Length: 150
Length: 193
View (cartoon, rainbow over the protein chains, first blue to last red):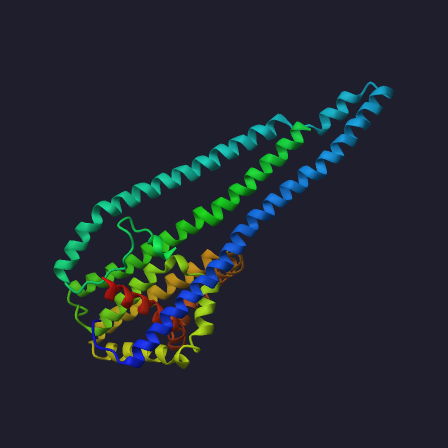
């Protein structure tokens, strides 16, 4: 690929690389807006839930107390509103298995990257011997995106 | 009260967990997956060159490899929105002359090769385009939800023509706009190395 290029070609290449950089930055802003916007949305809904719950629960407490003074059956009213045990167990199990799954996936990815790192120089040398003009993607030795590209 | 708070907190944790799973873990996985598939295409092409089907010093091999290198390098930036920007802006640069030059150089380089070598290079280009489209569709939640069921239906109806569409002259030319940019990055890498 090391052939002489005209000034016009080089100028066009420079424009392409510059546009690539601008395009990348626009995409990153757009992507981050969606990514962190979702996180803000989740936090907002959680806040709204707690906010609305605090007022309503106070009212419920009062009504239970008022009912309690008239009826003996208040314990039933309270127990109906509570979260069942099976729900809590299911939820905690889901968190455990979900978190465990992510951790397992991460560990597997790490093992794969360890292998890439170990065999990368051997592969590179073998290919270089066959094709001395061999070009590279210039990723890191572990096959990750270069820090300056992110 | 504590039970309701428990439900809210657990709901919040699940929502954040899903967010993490999609935006961090899944996206990282998709980039890694795409890169591995592109590495495989590059390795297959290298193997064909080693077997003598494609000459290592041919211009077409150089372009194909450099384009693949650029694609591998900027796989983490590939998305539907990014491709849209490339397709919308390429005419602003040099009135699309650069892409035309890339297409002409590639066609000319291919013509210099025997048929078996041409086939090998074109196969690697087709595979690269399929990987690119697969990555773009599966990286976007909306596109995935819209297009994956459609793909499944088409697959059932035996009308699966996307491969032919990408292989067609028109499909190849459209996607070579992205290739031209990828090659430029690959060239840049070769100069820097």
